[in-house]
Image 1 (spheres, chains in turn cyan, purple):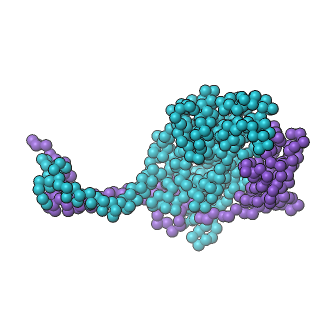
Image 2 (cartoon, one colour):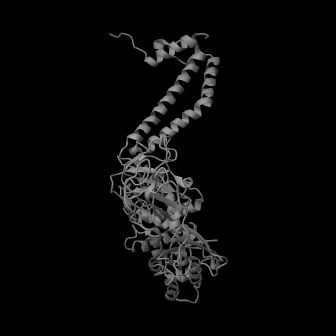
Image 3 (tube, each protein chain N blue to C red):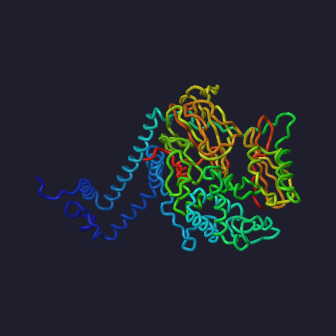
Length: 391
Length: 188
């Protein structure tokens, strides 16, 4: 090669200074070609390796919560973040609901309940009296009725006043912090559609997380915002099904069809419902290689297929959770309404398992096939109920 | 005793490479080596995951060579059709009776309205309606057929179209007897 550019500098260090154009072009060309040729492979390996590491071995990483409202000061009239599908007025109304809750020392579960309620009643718009198009004289974010003692029309048209009245009523309900969202909301609203609020729980969680530094991930019934301890229910309404080490992650390179997260725990450990819902499946699924049925009341093995004793719960917002390999028939029955944290069954190794663990799946869009499965680790992190063992 | 600062090993390899092959090919070769190293390292990480998978006796883990796909559901059963005990009303009938009573909300006291729903409701729903105000029923009439979504043998959802939106009822069966357990409302 030409000139001094190719010569190593003192001590073998190559200096960029004085390299000819051609050499730089050659270098750039080579880099581009290398990336074009192998970049996909490299990033695929990196990405796969990263995903595997995050979900497999590195429990500490997966159990790390980014934030649980430690910097949750909300200023409705200041600069507010954008929230998908909400316009600026809706975001401002949500910020007012949070701010009023903070000022009144309402724990963050209350903010989620209030926002879910306003999403149902007004889609977070401060509605005027719409006459015939409305429920009678209902006004504002929470569709409160002056004729029912909520305040004057002018008062309930003020978002801060309306929110204050909502919280005033909410805190009089015994146990509101831990009851299903829709029940708490209904006890305030007294509407003819008591279960309409539940479907907004997931989006209300997103809104609170976006506006208040992840406060929906905080312990739901504690005023001082702090991340949940294992077993506590987050403001989102979710809790960990089982405090346990993650022994295998979602669709890792070595297990691309593994549609859930494996939580390794001793036999007999209690598995809890991750959120409120209705049980849709309780069954034994175990077959030998030849397709013959196999008992779920005994340990399975890798030669046996299926979930073993398993249960599935349908939650609000078309979310489904699944729990597999229990040691005995689940503690719930099909059609039973369960609340977050309620025992569902006991860890075992029925079906396709070579050690006791709970295979935990999360599905969205009401699709309980493999196509509807999502990675439970980031999902549960968002809900403030991180899987894995915490550092 | 070292008197001169020593360059790190990698640099001497790099300079040797450059001396041997010249700048352009030297850098290309270097990059090829980097890419190979990255791939090998990534693969090695992947394999360590595999061996961890095989090792974890307490984890119920599956080696990738298993003849069976994985430890999730081998197949997901389609929801069983709703089952009704002989002589009881089908979920469709219960849903449509309930919707009719729910919509009849004017000129009626809250107590009478709730009583008309109680026989078709679970205790849970009846409790939720304890203080409900029938004036907040936002619609007046059913405008089309009831559509059922099966979730389980004892759990269905019924969508009832009305003049102002969709009324969605969750129905649960106990011993094959259907009752409405939840009321959802989506304005049009």
